[in-house]
Length: 268
Ligand code: U2P
Image 1 (cartoon, rainbow, N blue to C red):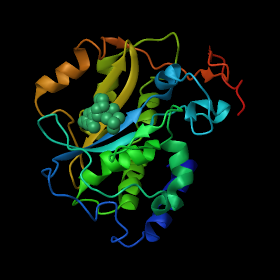
Image 2: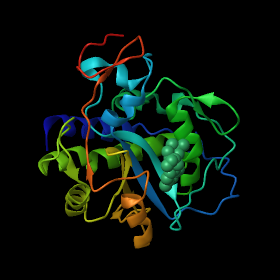
Image 3: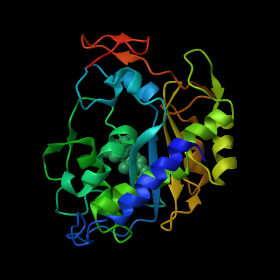
Image 4: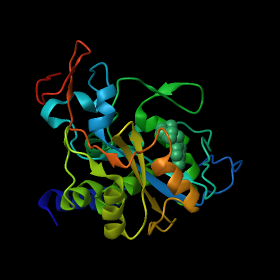
């Protein structure tokens, strides 16, 4: 195991030992209005594609960190989903509390950063951080698997480190490039061979935007699409992926709002 990954696993295991009591819970007021979900999707975003859309810099925008900006897939969210392709949302009346995940903040900043300066909608008519949006919209619906915010974020991080999509793609010869195109079937096969389950891939034009890995409620990998229809639709439909796709390199976002494709020229 690479040294960095080993270090992160140690950090996360130590963090797990410091779990707050389950009663400090985002989910304690789970409203029971929506039926229990069927499986989890771990949604991962490709910064090289997302950051092309970033028009401004601000301290919370992960695209604006120059050489410290992420060059690996980062977490978008851990989503409780239904087998029919729909999902529940906003299942609790309680609000995101950043104090509950303070011990995870450094790791989250690095691997679950917001990739824009815009604030996100929260469940009760307000605006909040990317983490608040994901926790309130999706985390609250992961009951009864997670009963608090901390467990929700920790589980997402653990899955992310255990199923390292970026290294699987690198090992298969798929590296960030602004000139290469890769067969989408090759990317899917590399992940299927590594994790023994089919991912979903989402594109913006011909650029990979997201990869989704799916898990049973006991966190064993499973196919994302239940019916083959959903899978074929996601891979081939208009607005999703063409047969050959790119994994764009991370350009940098300048304070004047223009894009520069030379890395490292941004300081906050
Ligand atoms: O795909 C567009 C947005 O829909 C939400 N989504 C999609 C698939 C799924 O299985 N579950 C789900 O929630 C996501 O919304 P967000 O979390 O970004 O608000 C996704 O971005």
